[in-house]
Length: 177
Image 1 (tube, rainbow, N blue to C red):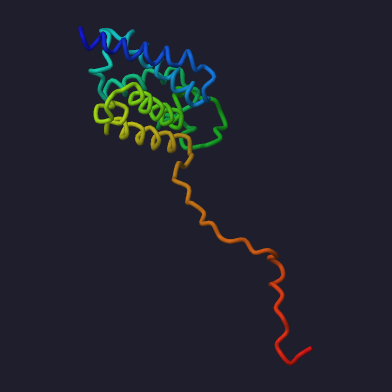
Image 2 (image 1 turned 45 degrees about the horizontal axis):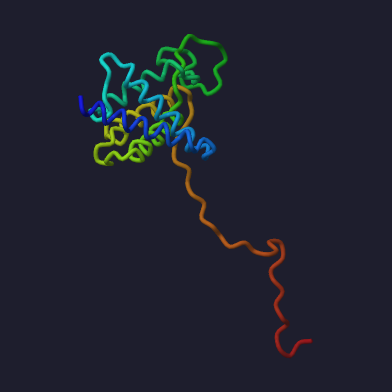
């Protein structure tokens, strides 16, 4: 029971801190909303889960729960639209949370967990199983939608030339003139 009380203290601390700084950055506001949503999910879970005992498996359950609110069509292997980024016809494939949305959410929750005084080594949002799940979602969605999520190559910064068409003027060699 004591861990439940400490969980409630953590929740109230984060919520009250957010109430006084409601004009914080968009990121901070989103992080607070995400955190409150996760805590509400834990409290509404049957049986209720306490934050101190939350694991990577509980985080995965939460992410799968969020799929019902997704807006990204993810085609099944048997769907004629599978792999087509611009499907020619509607299909009954499910709507899910997009990989980028989940990835950003996990990042915000991971930060919020630690901001609330919890130890990084116990952070369920940083668990290996969560990272593997996100990678699997990314791969499945990229194949199903025909979209590649490969890392973009970084462009190297090259010094700009003042006038690319004409080479810089050089003084005439000595003796000419």
